[in-house]
Image 1: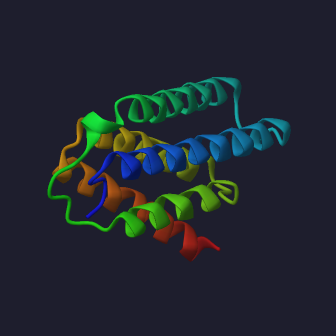
Image 2: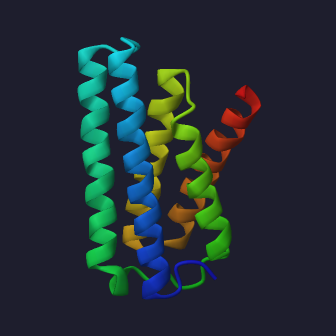
Image 3: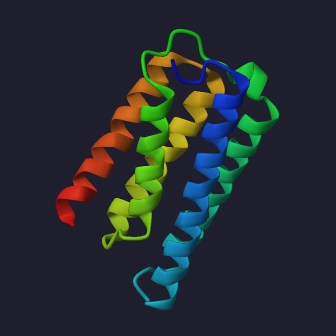
Length: 137
């Protein structure tokens, strides 16, 4: 079972932090390449900061964020998030980039709330994003 103990929640937080790092790198590339306007860049920077904040909250409150009865494997969740992190740097369309960020934010918030159904719904959204990105490449 996923997120069933403090160490698994901390591992999720670390993976989410990795996604925030990847978002930052892709955003900086988009700014250098003039793919993105100032307002959109600022919005994404704010989303990146919120994602980092949520990951930090998971670290701090890991013991309180343990989820009971989450019908997903820890390995499956970690592979999905790691797959999302890998795809972030390759995303060509900014709209797709923004959608994946939003779905990662929802996943982090759901994990912090330790509610299985919202976590599963967010995982499905991230999974759909990653599958769509695989189809693009």
